[in-house]
Length: 267
Image (tube, rainbow, N blue to C red; front, side, top):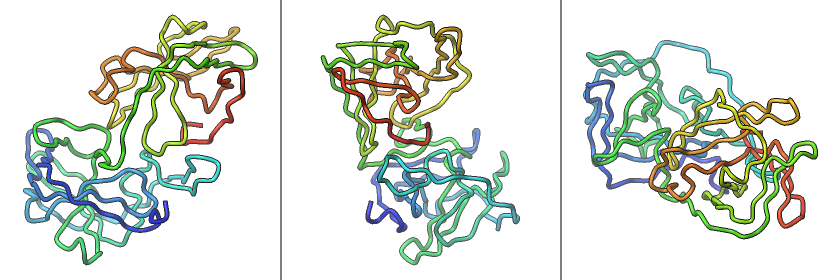
């Protein structure tokens, strides 16, 4: 956290390929992971010499709206993964990437830091990506970030205004890097309220695509209050098909003791 306000980078030995549809945009084994100041997830920068596209200065455009959030009561405000690529916190030149298959305005960024001379940072959301021969989703994985899933017999109870939504003594607890919350995954049989299909779909670089659910509690609908990974990535196979609730918005007790709500981007 002490270096969060700084521009950080880390080399990787992985072969990284970038595509726009069927067009190969870049192919390199010299990619660099970039964390612009206060960003909590990285982007990839690739040697400009490996980019098989035309790079031109991007047209002037307003900076999209964004907000800084804290991942806990004492954590400094940061740029979470939902903040678009066009929000830059390091000096550089926005670039448009032009290929025969399409044009991506502002999808490149030539950083002025001398240690990154010759590299161009690319917008993950604008292209299709693979590491070696495997597709990656959401954003590049952080090599210092990991997921641990542990079985637990501790009693977890999740409530909304006094109504129990779910309760278990056989949950799977998911610990993710330095994220301040433990996520409690429960069997569908441990959920006591009706769950309807939600309207939200999110993707995690480590867990995969999440299906969301709306809970019906005493006639009230709690929109997109829970989710599950029906087809999880390898790191999250142990929670496949289980249900997790956004405890930031609910009351949780652990072995009968209240759990303090922690503010996150999903609060």
